[in-house]
Image (cartoon, rainbow, N blue to C red; front, side, top):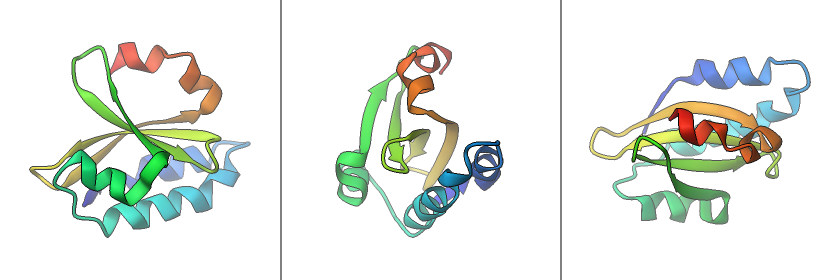
Amino acid sequence: MRIISRRRLREFWSIPGHADATEPLRQWYAKVKGAFWKTPADVKRTFGASVDFVKVASGNTVDVFDVAGNKYRLIAAVHYDYGRVFVLRIMTHREYDLNRWKHEL
């Protein structure tokens, strides 16, 4: 899969206090880059319980990945027909729980 964009990952782990996300986000990137998903079931096979599918205000469904032992959440839009994964947001679990992101996407 092609990931758009790796820069968002680097920007997140560069935030003071988020350095512990560096290696888990690199691992996530490597896993996704090496994948070839055609359906959400393929994503589930790769990530198991560490991924959920959530419908957002726009009516679209996004993939929510648990990162760094569920300390962080990565929200992505997977376009199966184009082989692309768009990183939409990365946030702390606490920010995720506020649910604001659901209304913004």
